[in-house]
Length: 412
Image (tube, rainbow, N blue to C red):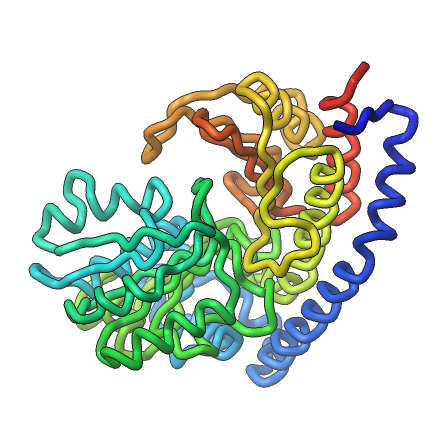
């Protein structure tokens, strides 16, 4: 393993930046195309200050909310969208989709391994889908963490009602992040065998990473969180569902009430931050990606296993670094917290969290609680000891933190 002293960290960062420059330029090119698409949506809908006003009461004819939903549908390639502060998280949005789309005796298939911890509990836990008569099966991934297309083809003979695809890897040490091209191949296989099967994509951490979104590749429905990529670091909360109009209507009826659905639901707070966050999102995601590439290159160069590697294509903003033991893992996460703008004085510790079987440690010195488009890092207490870094509103912030992490890991 390379020996590093505190005095040469800056030189290491500069040399790494020179090496990764072509990748950073490709990220900027994708951000530019996504920025154009987002700006066009703003222009077409003639967004003005009047769209930012908070809705109250029932929220009938909430202009800001309705316009925002039209824009999300356009930007993400869907017929319709549900964008609501009443959706607390990406998990909540996905849960609403699953409960709206599935009836007793319907089959739900997770196309690649077990979904992330909290979503898995929605399926298998008390009062979950299985408890309500939904059938469920998981398809193990291949050796490299990809979708097992042969097994998926065989499973499609069972005519599942919904196939769930998780774009990001979650806390998995096996599953790989899915690119839009890989998702497209999977969707094509599913639709080629059974066009009636609904393809639901967990789009969390993947928005604006590539020039296309799941809606552009014939996925039926996708869901995510506004305090991840599409909120641009400004949205204070909320979630979204985008896809086929009839399916979005089902989810809205489940979230609100049958027959009322999208017609009610006040925005409750000033929507300026949600609109502005959406406008900034392509740039902010680009900043997060560039920070992740830098981290991957630095830590791989120092002998650590990383996923993905710095030169590999990315499907989300998450960077995984494998560390040696729980002590090193804890120290790594604590450095991220110590160099955060909020609660830098707080010392994270492993602890229990709702929906997780393992103790979790989280660095989350963020302006918005739980925001993972802001630079954050978390890790479950289990082998292999993996730190999951994500986000970064500014590349410079991530660069600074990576330098401090190098000093921690190789302090003499």
